[in-house]
Length: 434
Image (cartoon, rainbow, N blue to C red; front, side, top):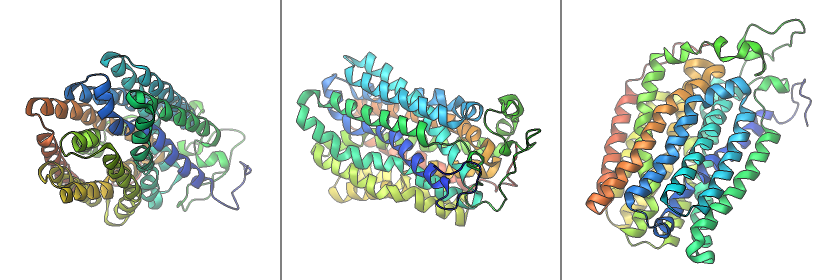
């Protein structure tokens, strides 16, 4: 273990943080959220669910996510991301195990909601943690890589879930949750062991920062909030100028844009397999293979678009991604042929996690690394609201019309609205210091 009071002479610990951020996102989103996509068709059959109820389970998950997204960033700033993330990951593991035991819709809804609580308590702080460990010039790239954890989840659950279902038969969906639960608990332990709250704990500065490492004071804490440990009395929420978050017009603008992403992408991600298997005639293995393919390709999406946003600007990066995703959703619903499905998967894979990555970097640009978790938590409230509405609306449309087609069309239109909103963003004046 490197000396925590000295500058690292080898690998900067920020890269360890980035790796653990990928692993954390794998657990809190890749397994906890997107594992539901491949499990849903058999779970719907096993619990005799309607499309609306299937959407309600996803909505419950996002309501839980929303609850912790509201306070997750503030908890991370008060107690440190390491503790908040670790405990939240443990909660996810327990809740997914209980989901596998659910005897009916009501109990499944309860445990999916609790899973969402854990996801919100881990994803928001870990993306904010990336902003603390990487300077402005590298922040978009780092956030993009961290968001790739969701892609790993798709790549794993795509082939894993159909295999588990084949092995365990009618109870395969239950055992799928058990397997995902066990892997998430392991990730929680790794978070406690390896995560660190900020570069100063290792005597380092953020990667990509031109500043010198902060010198510790023996007599009094530094007046700069970025130079203090998380457990400092001066770092309590009342002293962190939370008004900078709530009063920022740019943050509100980002929030309204983000709600469109939450509403649109989750319709696609939730009902992807159910649509391909139930309406397009795909087998669960082929649907799983496409889900895995989307995961493998999408791992570089955050990396690519985070870097693109570093170069061309956040608003143009956001607008371009929204436009491509709008095409993806509409093609999926209207072009009912194998080439259309494959093109849609490709477009989704190339842009999948780009918007959260760019959004995390943008929050850091506007409010600085110290308040980035709080800003990200604030805009994620709106993102979560969109996610909570989307699945229930799509499920209801599916029950009323007998098809998910119009749900995907509406998702595409919402993405186009997001593109227009992104183009009207103003550039940040400067990084705000708490």
